[in-house]
Length: 444
Image (tube, rainbow, N blue to C red):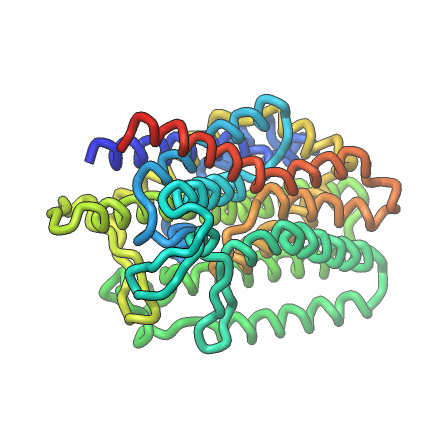
């Protein structure tokens, strides 16, 4: 039990570090454009990091918890993974490199699990509990087909989104930038497009709402409030609100002079940065929830017959067996609180990289980048894919830079960032493997 408590504490420490390491993702553009002071910006971001507790479910947490097969590992694996993730996060923060905390954690978890499988079974095959022959590399959930044709999961999908997340962010921000640029011209066609988009958004979002009859655990006695505050519905309400707000601005953009337009864009940056901070909190806090849930599951498996206190009564969901997940309320509350506290601590070295070194950011670019980043995070969270908020916002900033000219993006800085992204998972995995072997000498 002592080791389990240590893991939970270290996981929350990682969550705190994640907060100040990734604070730059949400606040870099509002600081660069002087919409908010650095102190105001971190307060703003921290508030919406914490607010995500009431917005998002636990889909990403489930995906992270199943990075490795919990029935074949021990608590030392998870401890090694968390320690490695903390070390890499602190190193990249110190160097001012906006690497991915998400991929650091997943790489560490997977690397420690592989080291455990090699230490226990070697490189040859072994007979598992199911009677079949398994190999050391199978301890990691590399790929699992989606249920009923849904989105597949596994480490390969997470690795794929190292490329796809920034590409989605760049593509979305490029389109939003082109939309805003055309809306600034005195022409009827951009307005027709904007109205059509507003109608399409309302129709799509309303069709995606979950009715009261399909809500497993209504939050209120009132049908209306239960539907309105269901996590699934809140996300789509937010998507609609963001798109409709930008659309409303586009309808009046051409009638504003330069000073009025800049003032309006700076106010919209508050909305876009808040939306991105919500996505950051919802995406990154869930990863720590997943690690804690996996640790409890491993503890129960390695200590059969143990009676768990109600505050640690965690059950991982299993779609194949129809098992619903259970997570005590203190776990998500602690995770969201830790990441919000970390965001309050700031991360000024990375703010400089994100806010000025990639491309020059104005209020116009800030709105486009943060809006695109927020929409990308909501989309991937809906698919239960843990992506990097760092990669997403970096891609979004690059996307708005491309609307000016290709040379507006400082590609030397960008290439350095991409190398950091590529190396994060393997380095974290190797580091976690080494930490596992060292810990195994002292912890049986």
